[in-house]
Image 1 (tube, rainbow, N blue to C red):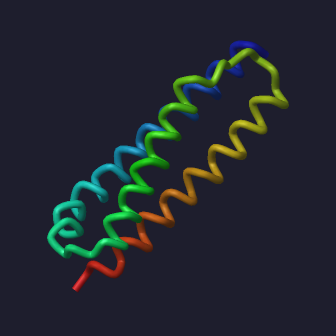
Image 2 (image 1 turned 30 degrees about the vertical axis):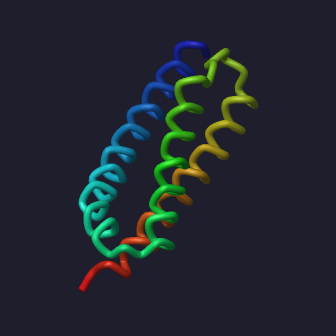
Length: 99
């Protein structure tokens, strides 16, 4: 069970890294645009998104995979929820930028 748990953890982490790479690319593509807009509200939202992004990284780094299945399921569910929320925030912020 420990090995299966380890495999699942590695897959989860890999999925996370791929998703974050996509999010980072989207953020990078629009960061300059948002700074040029001089739109204070959008800049603040971008900062909040970047803060959420750092928070997810920190949580991923600090999670101890101790093999406790219920702790793992809770972490995974909460983390996926927050990742999806981050993705929505990014989309909402940037869809208004497109001409």
